[in-house]
Image (cartoon, rainbow, N blue to C red; front, side, top):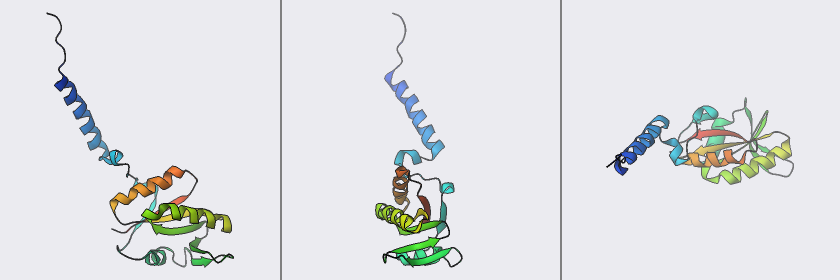
Length: 145
């Protein structure tokens, strides 16, 4: 008779162990594509269920920047800081906020920035979308859940 073949069940147990070990090691975040290390972004925790202007008023204080700065073409930058033209929006509207931040950056000569308001942990997927653009947009986060 000869060599014994490894059973299919034994191989599956080994693979399962490796996968479970990897998930435990990473907290399972890489599987869901919504992992954003909080240390990478400036994040503030604020009261949930508020309107966008509440978060602008809380974040953009007078020593940080100017709220609702009106540009020559009558567009309004949510927060015009020393270095950044910052657009605030709820995370689901990430694409709109990126477009506005880029426009305000061009009009003011400042760097573009977005502040995404996260209302659920699942909103981190929208942060990843902004990251993938790779166009030097500064990302700030508001945790509102």
